[in-house]
Amino acid sequence: MSRGVGIVWFRRDLRVCDHPALCAACERNDQVVTAFVLDDRLLHGRHASGPRTQFLLESLADLDASLRQRGGRLVVRHGPPERELASLAAATGAREIHFSADVSPFARARGERVRAALDGVALHAHPGVAAIDDLGAIRTRAGGPYTVFTPFQRTWEREPRREPLPAPAELPPAPRALAGEGIPSLASLGLRQELAEPPPGGESEGRRRLERFLADGVAAYAGTRDSMASRGSSRLSPFLHFGCLSARELEHELPPGEGPEAFRRQLCWRDFHQHVLLHFPGNVRAEFQERYRGRLRWNPPDGAFDAWREGRTGYPLVDAGMRQLGREGWMHNRARLVAGSFLTKDLGIDWRHGERHFMRLLVDGDEASNNGNWQWIASVGTDPQPAFRRIYNPARQMETHDPEATYVRRYVPELAAVPDEYVREPWTMPDEVQQRVGCVIGRDYPAPIVDHAAARREALERYRL
Image (cartoon, rainbow, N blue to C red; front, top):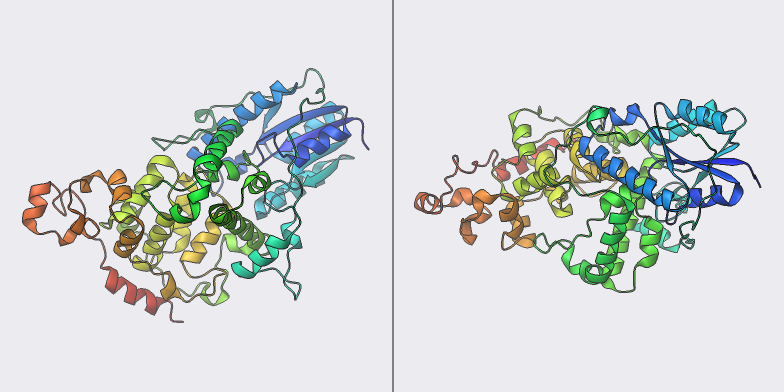
């Protein structure tokens, strides 16, 4: 057991509750340095995001406050982690660094760069990102990784779980006169907030929302999660993405019942996407199904793509979802599926364009889940269902999941006065009704940019390889 100086390298685990790496460092060392490194390769990389970075900065400020309450503080450095952590270890005499392992190709490569840069300093990986501790240990009977969700779920449910760890009551002291930077502003990082109504970040806010969800939402979750009018979603995904909440602790806190089991299934989906990315890192740029790689005839992302991004396709449910994304940095899961189906099937635009747009604005933008879901809805991922099973009719989806147009009218106010019988397909309104309610199609609200029935036929032909 080491009794010297240890460093905790925070990454996507911005909390003090149920933090195996933090607890291990505190148990093994007389002095502990808690650090976060701002890495420009992430901040300005292929998934650069002002909204997500702002959530990150708020989460760092909250983490620093929690650490200070326990006698520590967060040391913030800016630069390549392999340089900054090696420098920090040399300055403090640290002999070990503890961190929470992650599955993305970038995270794994970054960890290896740090390991190679350390001279005589041990690098210890711990669980803490997924609901189960070892995603790589889940294997099929043949010994390979899972590529279909349902059998993965059966095995996942049988995996052993550890007890969540309490937050340390007190942190070992850090070396004196330890150099670090303050938490920067978003503007100083060369990024900007694009959202009008972003959620606040941090473990404190995440735990408040978790308490409300466990008290008032999870019991009915099975019946409300797809209802777009009920606000039945937990809205915990940004806090899970940044590790402000522990997926293991969240699962542990779920009570018995149909609603909690439905929510546990969503945690399993999150672990499944991470499991797939762990074993198939090429998915970040290419289709999982080899037969589609480079062979699908995608349309160029022209004006139709701009209309989709801006929520002016003429299909109310698609537009409501895209406007919610642009306003809040979050989108109802059902709307994500409908919008994804519309882009890839109705407009015939490459799923990677949608993936990148979502990752720019989503505060919960997670490479594994976002990539997995986009490939799923584009019918090119692990899901074995044929393409026609993933072509969603926006009007029918709205009839099922937003029958009174509560969600649509919230985000598309042009349709507020449109009668219920026309709101799912407002272009069918007679001219006199359009004039009376002040929603003239083509003037106050767009005409459909594509005919769904014709687009469906074209999509089926596109996938016929």
